[in-house]
Image 1: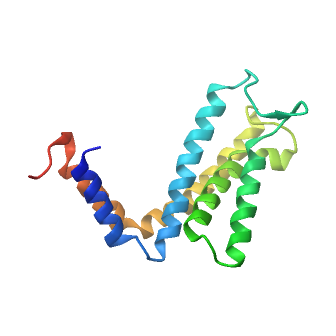
Image 2: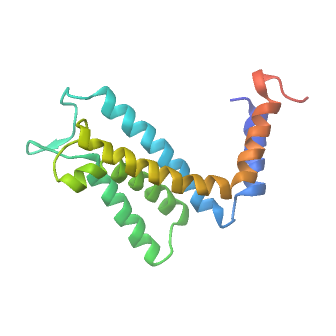
Length: 158
């Protein structure tokens, strides 16, 4: 990444996000989107080839790690500690749980079956809720978009 672009993004973060109420929300939103992209990509690539975590022959679904992340984020919230880490854990956990939401409902692995579409609906609702956070941070998003526009093609202002 162009060093000037990186500096502009850091400046926009400091100006519009750092230390404000929206900081944890935006962090959780970014963690959610990143986790969702990684989890969906991984499950699509390894579909059916057995490259899953198993303990004693039992497939450990990523839903389990999502629930653990949400629980840890909740425990940390009780004493209001580690705010940004908590936001990341919440975003990661929410993505993992909603990605396998149909498993919670049907209590069986329906990820690639028609019933698995319920997970897609849950993800859409989660995405819609998190888009509100992006809207709350729209001044930062606009500043980042402007920075990319100014530095498009590697040519930035002198």
